[in-house]
Length: 564
Image (cartoon, rainbow, N blue to C red):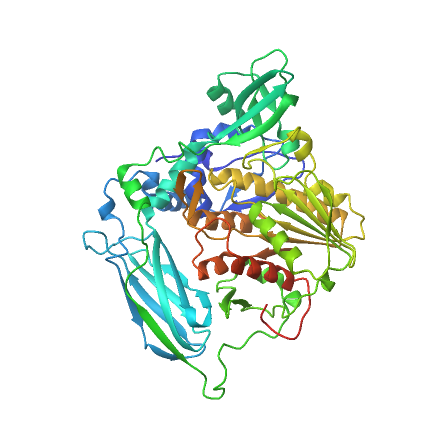
């Protein structure tokens, strides 16, 4: 796959230019899309960022990029599933003793073999590892290092005493990762269909962020430009034919994933259908207490409260953020909460802007409050509509706002009115002395598309956040990073979901928000979902509780305990 040097840069102007660096992980996905639709990116000179690539020498950069793309051959469909890494034939070797002391580091060497019994000589597979003990309801994520030669180094910390088991999954061979990247660069919003309705006239059409592509696919140049209200991404829809139908008559949006996996080869189908990804080698570790503290069952906890912790360090933590013990998430870098009665949220206005996984946070938060919060504004019972709850006892306002297009199926009388006011405008309209908290997440509804669209969203979100900081000095902004899961089931269509997409999105977020690390608090939820081996899109209660309590720990002071 060859690209000209001109294809490596997108040069666009805007009134307030934002420059960020695109990581190589993003380029892995984005470049394949750029060479097909490079002109598309240039069309949005008023709403797109200026993008630069890391590296001073263009020739060196091109070689690095080519090498990275070769790792996934680039996005080619596999032909022989037996030649892929096979967890049933792969091996785990413990480096060190089975009996260690509390706080020691555990190391494993993982050697991957294919279905023929031949050792793999290249990396690129996605492994997930964890340390757990069901008897203690204890779970901890491990760190996995790809040595790029078919072997992987797994490290974990002995966080509690007693017997525990180490488990390693070959979650996705690199062939499936390549499949996911290929589909995302070619799917191009083919799932979306919108409906228009006026009087007795109905019509349907397709939409796309790329106006030129939309005109080509819909075979019409009569296009509705909805970019001015979608705010965080350009959005165009073909106008249906009909005398009494106009752009303002758009009433609903639908999505269908029926054909999403139609391009899978036989090899890819076989790999996607694997029932078990766990390497069968059983590795048990016995952790002894420290001699000076025989009664100690877990490692020492940090003394610093999360509210006082240097939040900028959260953006590039190399070690896991925490672990579960007795079903409770314990943070490793700062002291979490032991109790919560809602008093620390007194006089606060909290905005939740995101998808249904963030709404899980709002639902859980309301469930643990010891006082009543009444719904004072609710457009509909559906989660995709705005909702405001007010807690009179402590003067707390909880605002729910779904993120912009793309979003899952919904119908509303006027979608343009619904999306015309984003969190940016809402918060800027608050009184300047208001104590405002904003939680942002964007992941699930855009993860099935090319990451370049996610990057466009995040740049516009940063622009909104910067305008909020200028208008209100008493605002705290949190970003919920993607959590891990490994499948999506939409009706009868089961789509394997490589965690690598979430990691790429996380890398994009880190690059886009560089320079705001002291002002924006990032919440890493991957560790909690990896620890419990989360599978579905919507995590279970144990994970949601851990996520929400981690968030609250940065707002509320508590000196009694480090657990939440």
